[in-house]
Image (cartoon, rainbow, N blue to C red):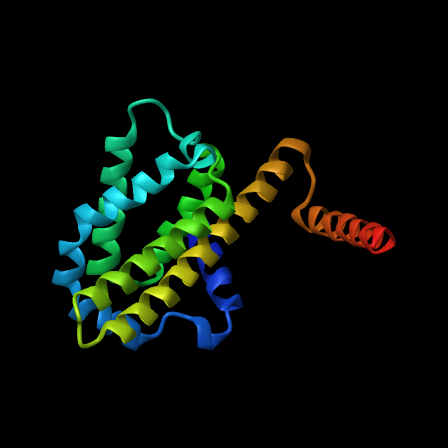
Length: 193
């Protein structure tokens, strides 16, 4: 747990304070727990309908596993809504980054679906005319950004660690080589423009 907790902390600390999940965000989510949980079946259905309607995201799944993945999402949603949204929660999200590496879930797919959840909460909050629709929507926006940051950071760190374990390439060396390659590609793009 120590390594995934470290990864979660690294990701959250890199976020500017104004973008982070705040105590008042956690409080507004807690106040709307029952309403949010009542949306579970519809959210899960919409989430997986979206994934299965798009060939690149559908390709991540094995035949017949949708019911199990829906249960996983239900568990995530329940844990997210019921809290606590603490270090243990974000360490779990760092572990999801590792699961995504194994499953072939690319970061754009994950970030899009994190946004999907935030937009879902915003739409449902306004449809329900919740008095705190805006603060609740903002809370889920910040939460989705934090979750996305932790998962992508975990994903990147695990890939670098895997390369080290397989090829013996230190993460710092990989980072330096990546920067050099990116610099060369940028120069090439400038010449093409």
